[in-house]
Length: 286
Ligand SMILES: NC(=O)c1ccc[n+]([C@@H]2O[C@H](COP(=O)([O-])OP(=O)(O)OC[C@H]3O[C@@H](n4cnc5c(N)ncnc54)[C@H](OP(=O)(O)O)[C@@H]3O)[C@@H](O)[C@H]2O)c1
Image (cartoon, rainbow, N blue to C red; front, side):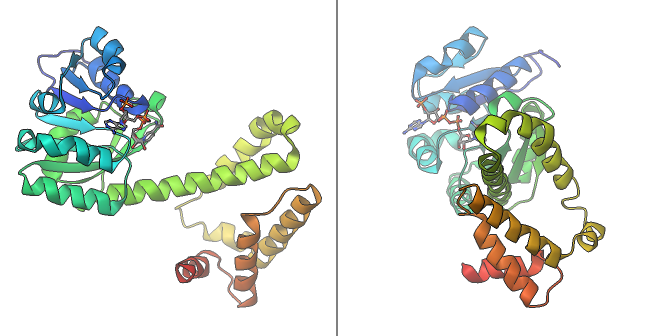
């Protein structure tokens, strides 16, 4: 990895929470002249010791680099901080890695476009220690020109995936992926409650992790063969047994019983494929 600060373009990072600090550290490590700003200035101390420049204000931070990366708590904070610095943003590239909704991303993109700034929205699919490693990746959408110009710096942060010109797309994919993660996490918690905390460590490493990895592997590969080998009626019986056994262990089925009812309805209606009618039911429930 190069550390030549003469060829790497300057980057500003706004926000030095856990994630913003990791982003700034990765850029510094890769040799990008890095300017940082944070509401609580002390959080920049380690980065400044490693070579970053601490800006005294958001406007100074934006003026310091053609590429500005924002990683703040939420969109209201981003909007609040950028409003007084609007003039400084003109002609610059802003990559906003703050978590938000697709509509928030689109609204910010439109406001920045009106001010003559270029906007890319991003969804970070990593935790701070995975930034700059092959395990972490980031989804981007919005201005293609900005993405291309920023690409050398963005590549330092993890795998960079551009989804398209709609600024809301990265957020949509990000939140969909997070919903899958939280769904899995709640299933994991239910499973550990069933077997008991005292068995959790061995159960988790010996059985739960390998099982989830094996089950995740075919996702997105059109696993028709697996569906045939595991018919829906059989799965509904298994689900009913999970609910019954959980009840026997004193574990409430707050999440699973809804899925069981939906599966039973789908079996009763004569479907042999779970996903399309389930998606239909979810949309109707909304
Ligand atoms: N951490 C993760 O694992 C992770 C993973 C993926 C995505 N993200 C996303 O990355 C973004 C930042 O997360 P984080 O983990 O860095 O959060 P964090 O540690 O809580 O940091 C929040 C940042 O927002 C700033 N902030 C909050 N309210 C502010 C205000 N009113 N005015 C000015 N600055 C304000 C904080 O400044 P102070 O330091 O002054 O409080 C800090 O820089 C979030 O959108 C999060 O969803 C995080």
